[in-house]
Length: 203
Image 1 (tube, rainbow, N blue to C red):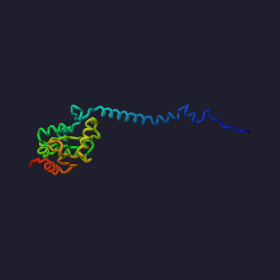
Image 2 (image 1 turned 90 degrees about the vertical axis):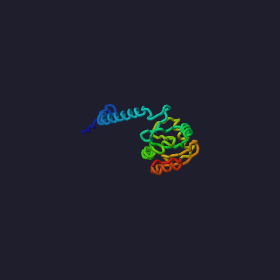
Image 3 (image 1 turned 135 degrees about the vertical axis):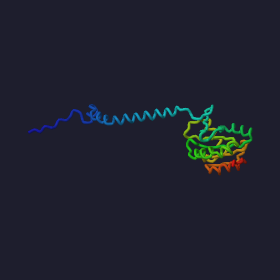
Image 4 (image 1 turned 60 degrees about the vertical axis):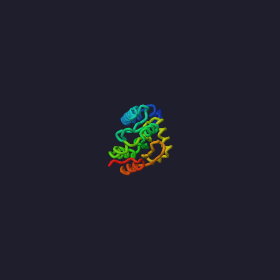
């Protein structure tokens, strides 16, 4: 008795997968909801990123230089050394230069909130000095001119790589009276500024 061999399909199994598409269609349908959700999340992410990039730089002066946040650092700060020197020479006041980075440094933010916003600093130090606010930017899109000027000033004064750091200049804008790195105790900071400048502290 002759034995019949089973009939083979005209197309191999992998060819059927390619040409018919039934198994592939079934697999895609299972992942379609996940695919749609992923696309929606990515669309929202890129849309929000575009909106953030389009926002104007906060607290900028007329030339586009980034100003300090008045809520933390107060007001009346200069951004350029030449402007601070002009006021210091006119009023015969020392220059207090604050090298800071509040957009990335928690120590800088702590310094500004605990010392610059204190009643003691506002009463004794702020009226008696010319303030120069020098930011090291990390998370802020600042003008290249400001970044370069701040970097050059830090280098010229040999300021240590500590944030925040206070440098006090004489009224001529050249002689360095002293440097206070880091975030000292508020009373100790005020005493050091008083010792360097001769400013009397309010009781």
